[in-house]
Length: 116
Image 1: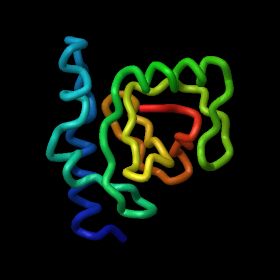
Image 2: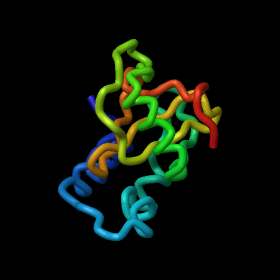
Image 3: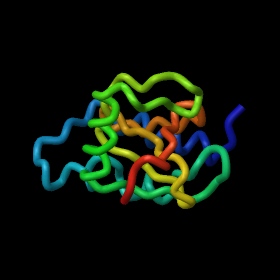
Image 4: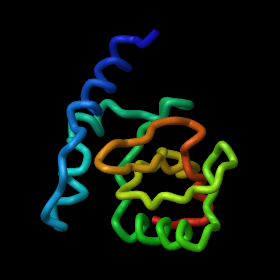
């Protein structure tokens, strides 16, 4: 059962499906609507999250290509990310793929090997 807050979050995520970005300069800001960023939080700790810079995304994708990234569930991460939402304590990065934030605890990527 979802709380009203969780239902609103899911609705906002679902509303963003199918959107594609064409301009690189607007990619990060358009990828996740500001309203969605304001209500999203870490599903485990409820800490705030923020969108990481493209340089961090590139560093993560480089390690994904090298096969050295595992998610919190212990599974290797094989699919590149389009963006990431970093937890306030900087311990975990929630991936964004096709404009959809993956806010599942086991899908979070430990952030200790990356910098912002």
